[in-house]
Image (tube, rainbow, N blue to C red; front, side):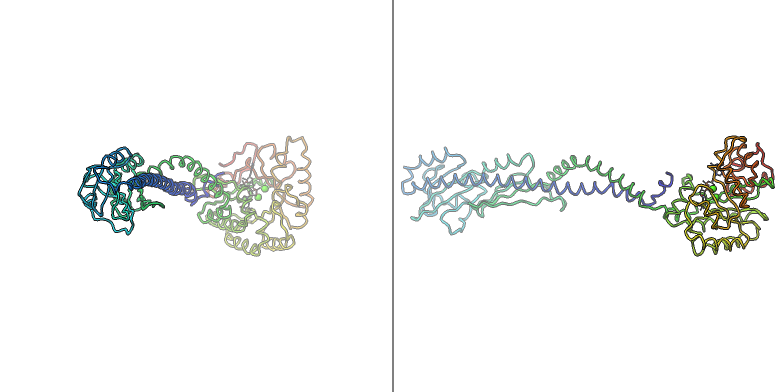
Length: 529
Ligand code: C2E
Ligand code: CA
Ligand code: CA
């Protein structure tokens, strides 16, 4: 329907928002989901790394326990044993014996006279404990490769130590994190940090990944895993790849739903009001032929609604909606204004019938008489005869009050017609209730005419009724010469229909009146377009 298209001045904004909503939500949700996924990977990696560090510590403390049998023996006796266990057990760089802080025997150098501090290349930690472990950036023998030292001081001031090569831990971290570019680090006690993976250039705050840290329950070991922003972006991209097709479908569905909702939400009443403000309504005038005078003696004013895109909205549709949505009174007032504007440029037309349609709501409205009188006043100088057309389509409830108003207007020189006669439920009761001057026979009855000699019983009955009630009668929707002749033969005075003339705009109507207004209607008379 053409009207629908224009019912969306801001509708497109709703539709765009509805389309964007799933996409924006999706982008936010996938970002959260990506963070969550990356966090889980971080936790899993840290857990595995910590388990590996604990396993190495288990090995180291087992080694320390085994070394506990050697401190009392001279280095020359145990040197070979130390070399063997230090070499054959996995992970170890060297193991050895202490006397006080001096290393008395080592698997790497045999009898030794260095201190533990010298080997660790740093002061001894103050732990207050007999057993401790510490990560080191290197040892005196291998200064550039990290290591972890495990030390146990025995009660007789001797002690044992074992050094695990940090390369094992670094290789392990490397194997776990290389493909993802994770940065991982390990720290034993308050020692040096053993790290793997390169640290990235600093990035925007919102792209930073928080480091995840975990501590061992059994040993003083702390691990940390940092996921680089690139990994976060990759996870986000992957989630988007899965989500976006779904979001697009959802987005299209939501747009369609919004468009439908808008279509239903914006009422006809709003549209009609807006159209009145924007002057989209105009009036067309359809000439009425008078058989007695053999000329045009009047016209019916009919509202037209043209949309900005040029399309027309059908009057029966917008009038029905205006009636049901309570804007018919305003619309009729608008019609009266438009007619006043048109008629201002018309010549004086004494006795010319100007008919227009009125809805039940308006007839029952308190201002009805005043509205009509105001209009009559506005066109007074043209000396026309106003005809009020009442339709049966909408029921007039307060018949008596309306009848009083009509009688008043009749007293002011106006005429009253019943329109679409025979199509409603109360044709006959209207005849009794209202003071009528004209009866307009609905097009449907005129259509039923099949031939001059063939009877059309209902139409004939309506015409007879009019004659009996002394009502002027008008045939609506006359489209053929046959229909015209049939009605003429039955003394139907007024003829309205495409056969005579179509409804046309004010200026066209005036031109038509000049050319055809006084001409008699014959089978060959053409209509204005
Ligand atoms: P209506 O009052 O019965 O008006 C006559 C309708 O028949 C008009 O339709 C007119 O264009 C059409 N018509 C005239 N001659 C012929 C013909 O030979 N053949 C055919 N097929 N149609 C013909 P329109 O203008 O579409 O209006 C339809 C209805 O809308 C009107 O019926 C009237 O009830 C309502 N309407 C139109 N303008 C107004 C208005 O200003 N106020 C109110 N309340 N109702 C209006
Ligand atoms: Ca009418
Ligand atoms: Ca009618």
